[in-house]
Image 1 (cartoon, rainbow, N blue to C red):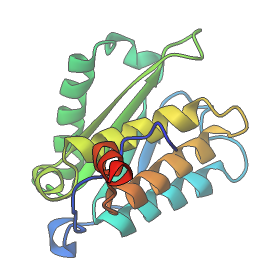
Image 2 (cartoon, one colour):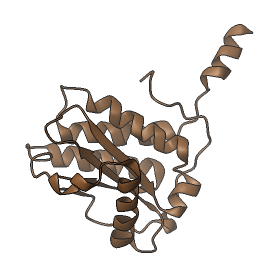
Image 3 (cartoon, rainbow, N blue to C red):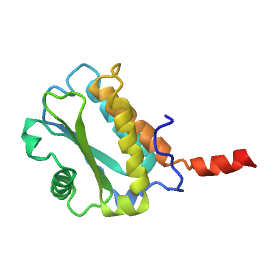
Image 4 (cartoon, helix red, strand yellow):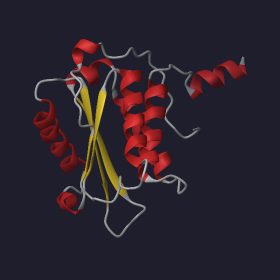
Length: 178
């Protein structure tokens, strides 16, 4: 995980009172991403692990062909904000991840991470969101994993890493020089 953003901030899990859990954790519009035996269980396990580590409950939306108009980062962020309000209303302790793979181009995708206000200000700062995006990128390229496990490991590892402060590369360099 050398290429994954390091967590250089002290973060504490979001208090339970800031996030009202929901039962539905994902929406998969392609129809064939989370379809193999065990994939849904793996995905849910990874998302629950993230929630246990961070106190922020994730929601994953894998858009299908209908997501074709959302090709820019800004259009996807606008969609995420609207979906967040639709799903969670004023509860600000969740995070929505929208993932869209470009059709007929299996190695390209666009992804956005949109946390609620409490989740963002207390846990999911810019660095924490980058950690999750880095893990998604890392596991996306692992051809040994099906989609359920790719997302499981992305959420699980991101939650663990962002909640554990690490030395920055600069700090490690200074220590090595001394």
